[in-house]
Length: 352
Image (tube, rainbow, N blue to C red; front, top):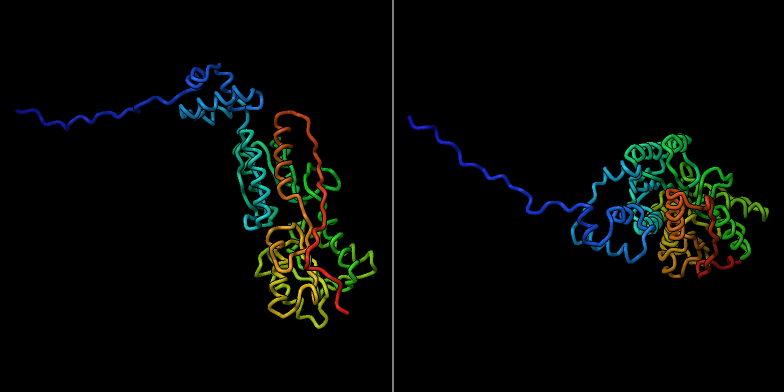
C-alpha cells in the first residue's frame, strides 16, 4: 500500500539578525561593558565624549537593555511617579512637563496618574505604583491622607510635595506660599479703596491650595478691619464655564462687591466673561484679579492683574531633588520660591 501523504514541511523562520547585546555596544564604542552599563544607568558618571560614543552605538545597533534584569541588579526601575489632582488643569501639565524634561535628561521615565481631588484614591494609586517598582514620587499640595506617608515609609520611597510649602517641615516640599499670594493681591485691592471684595475659588475639600488662598483673602481683609461676605463667595470646578456661572451669581447679589479675587486665572477669566455678558465694565465697575499669571489672563482686554507663580521652576526643582536623593547626593528638602504681583488693566479704584 502506498504510504500516506505527509504535509509539506513548514520552514522554521529565524530572526535575520540576532539581537545586539551590551558586548556588541561596547565593542562598537571602544569601551568596556561596565562603561556601557554606566552610560545607561548612571550617565552623569561619564565624560560627555564617552557617553556620546556609547549612545551612538546603542542607537546604531538598536540595543534595548532588558529592563527587568537591569532593575533587579540595581534595585532601581529609573521611573518616577507623579500623581496630580487632574490632567484638565493646564498648570499641572506645565509643571509635570518641566519635571519630565529634567528626569529624561538623567535617564528617568515619568509615570503620570490623577486622583481627581480624592486623597484616598491618591494613596491607592501610589501603592499600585510602588508595588510596580517606581523609585520616587511627586505629589501636588501639602495635605494628604496619612496612609500615603505610611505607605511611602514602608516601601522606602523618597517623595516631594509641590505647589505648596509645609509650614511644619514634616515632609519635603517645593513650592510657594499660597496664602501669601492672595493676601498680597487682596491688600492691593484694599489699597485702591475697595472695601467689599468677593472670592471665586475651587472647592476646598482635598485641595489645600484653594483653602490657603481663600485664607489669604480673609487675612488681608481682617487686617483692614473688613469681613468677607459669604454671599459674595462662590466655589466651582476649575473651568471657564463654571467660573462664569459662579461670577454671575455674585453679580446677582443685591449689593455685589466692587472687586473679586479669583484663586487662579481660569476663574478670573470666567469672571471677566460674566461681567461682559452682564454689561459690567472692567475695571470701572468691577476689579478682578487672578493667580498664576498665565497667557490666558495676560491676553484678555483689559489684561488681568495676577500673581506670578513658579510653575516650571517647581518641576525642575522637584526633579533635581529626587535625583539627588536617589543618587545619595546632597540636597535641600525644602524650597520656597518668591511670588510677585503683575499689574495690568483689570484693577482700578472703585467708582464713587
